[in-house]
Image 1 (cartoon, rainbow, N blue to C red):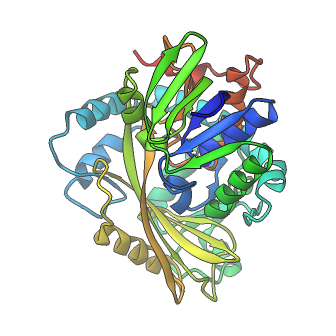
Image 2 (cartoon, rainbow, N blue to C red):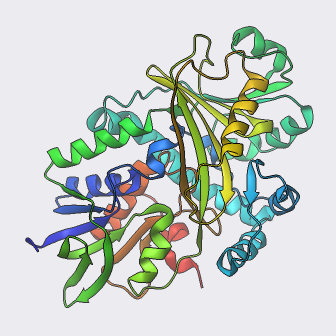
Length: 416
């Protein structure tokens, strides 16, 4: 069973590792329990963009109507696979109730707080913990082929500005002159100069190495089955035996609701949103910075070591099948905008689940009624972008320190 530790963190993805690092830096002994290998979940295959520009939540006016129209389009960017799933439909009903302007603005402000705090922390954070992660502060662009789509997104710029997130419109002709990687036909672009990028698999590897170097323990292949309350802490039970700890943090992404429920705790209002990506060798002619091809909802990220197309949101439960139609849609979408939409060698095709909370705001804090049980999940597509601030917030709460940001908007207690 081994000696007791101050905190067990369940989950070795980007949120779990950042939380563990912040706890170790606060003087706590930490043991991370990961059912697979470190970074094997959605921390691995996402596009690695660090995007305060994405503060606006998925729960927005018009989202549900669009999803209903797309239910018969299996390669649509937002796709709900038709099936009988009471849990999904309950979640969708709650999600639909929040697709209004008031809740959208509230969620946007909460998300922006975490995004801005993380973005400010990233230069030092990466330098200390993941210097080989190909971090670059080069901004990001969203490009449009139609005026109607541009106008809808441009209407959000004042709300971003009010939250301290810079955004500027660029006419299509001017953008094309400065960006030869793109095909003709762009109406306009919106540039977000405060965004950044890194390579997520290298980021996670760096975090894990730094945690071990600081004395943290990582047990891979350790599947947690449940948690038993002790007089002064918890006993975490799993495939590697029992682990005694003062506190336990569940940071298992889209699997958190299932794991928390199996531990006898109240279920969290979350669903797994399946995303896809394809990684290639770097083409000769590439965009200057990360870019969203808006009409096709395709994200393009360029690193020195490669090139990735990603995105899409598919609600199909925990189906691990690589959907060829959706992978092909990434390539077709990129080909509409780019002269060289993919590299010569396809290195990896990937899918993984993003943890979508019912209001698209992260769930961070103590589980109601549980003195020593905490969660850090529900980051949707922004786990990497929000990782340093999430780790710091949860470490502050576990250690009983005054948090640097208000924890109330992220509390699990906000759900009935």
